[in-house]
Length: 284
Picture 1 (cartoon, rainbow, N blue to C red):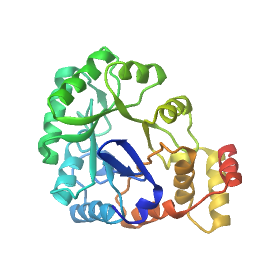
Picture 2 (picture 1 turned 90 degrees about the vertical axis):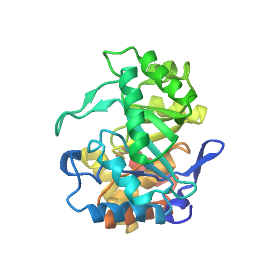
Picture 3 (picture 1 turned 135 degrees about the vertical axis):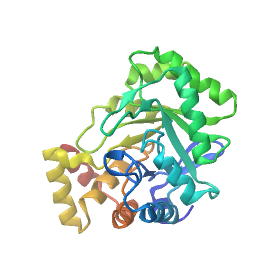
């Protein structure tokens, strides 16, 4: 796919799946508090379609976003999906009410969640299916094993894990081939540097969620604002450019319901930061 996002470079999960390295997180196209339908459904549809026009080839979602609403909107906006577009979704969280996120990684729940995602997304096989989070009440190996069975049944092609530490990633990889890790990571929050190092060493995609959250970290926020003013770009663009430069396996998935912010985020792929600027940002 061509467009600004294609300037981010390509990451390949393995044949035949290759994606542009700036993706789109579809959590925010739902209603407030990630609950219910959006206030302006037409705008949500337009944002999703525009993301693809801008060269986004990875859209990340989950059954818990809405719940179900994000997946339904993606299918409404984009099905039949253009060649080269990867829809990645996740299972393992439930939403009994707004503001509540409960872990449920029992094998039977993951099977049911995957079946629901297949129907809502109008797919026979999900290209990338990710375990949303380990469940302390369920042996991790059982949760990952359920994804392996779904893969063997042809319902998912690639498997990813989310919100894991190094030990959990190693445990998952002993059971299945893990092609992606999705952890919270941004300029101001780098507690998962050790997980990123494993991913870079072994060519596993690292999808940082909350990639633009550095505004909550004073030092990182000041550094990004300083660099943005000097370069004549936005702070969000600086942060995304830093992430893309941080590692060749980094695949940021900034999400938004704003067309203007979507355009701004995708334009960040054309911003090149010098080594000195990258170091300045890292120092805060």
